[in-house]
Length: 302
Ligand code: KPL
Image (cartoon, rainbow, N blue to C red; front, side, top):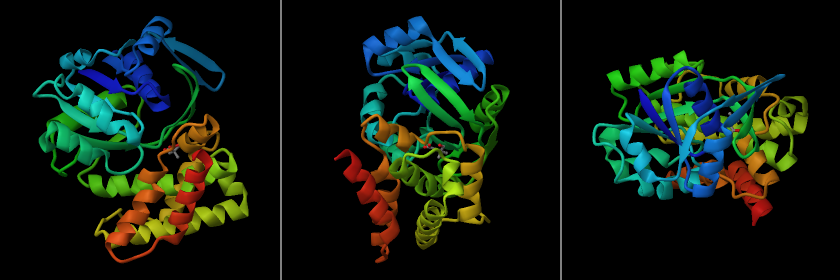
């Protein structure tokens, strides 16, 4: 299977390195030509505990590189999905799939509008990775990855991709309930990302601080209520325990939003807490905890 991964951030580098180490033909796609050149030359460096490995990965800013791929995984920030997909729109093969493996909501809808609904897969991962420098990451905690057809159908291409990811050591399951899956990931991001970004703490520290943990609980329970108002079945779960479990497994990770705030970059808050607030409004409901978290994080980078 030949895969293109769009976005050389922490998660893009992690997936590219793991797939390439397992023998999959993988290409990283960037939009910055100079950075792509440097990454191709220096490779992707992955630190895991005391171990440090360098993986030679072909990286390109030429949209045409995706034309040889069986599938394209989008791992750019949610606010860049439209621009990235538009750049590649004419180069993705007619029989190829495209998959969002991003934080935040609304990415699959953008991919469907640009590539056609029949091409779109969606997935989530709770792997924890920190970008230490360009093309240099720390894999701070393993997590679960789940993928499926956006329309919920069963398909050979999803089974094949799942096998490829598992073969690369990325613990992957398939699901027929992608909407529930995306909301489940949203609950994780709602509970962990803003709190860690605002307090500048690692994921695990939320569990050690009573007040931080209180905020996590209020934000997650509020968002879960909105998911139910949306008619989403996030599965048989205790939402707070789900988020606590991820915080525990990725305890040493610096969440993506914390990394963004520390680097002075735009965050994905509008696609996480902001999405919950907008979804609540559609049903005549309010989501004051998520609204306040949204405003606090937005104020940090305004
Ligand atoms: O998705 C993440 C993120 O940082 O964005 C988690 C799962 C919270 C891991 O840090």
